[in-house]
Length: 119
Image (cartoon, rainbow, N blue to C red; front, side):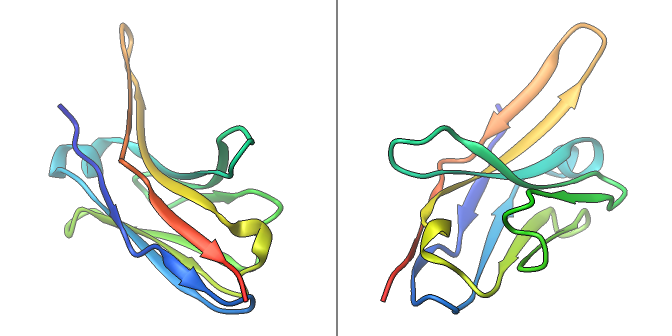
């Protein structure tokens, strides 16, 4: 059973910053793609950012230039640094690990952490 644990959410004013963390097992961080997703009330879950085990990253257009995803495979931790936050960034943020194997897909989620951007 994969266990991913997020932390770092909270309430922040527009223009502020937060840094989310996600911890997991060494096996996950050696082999899996890692992502941050978010889900706002009444909306579908959307991909925010992703990072491969070797460090290649990708971002949703809405967060490019404001958010930075990083991972440390030795510390088995992934982070999402969020700067210049906007009210539309308000959502529950989820950590995800993903690996496609020949006969199975490993796709696991954390419990989520709430981010609220409001004055």
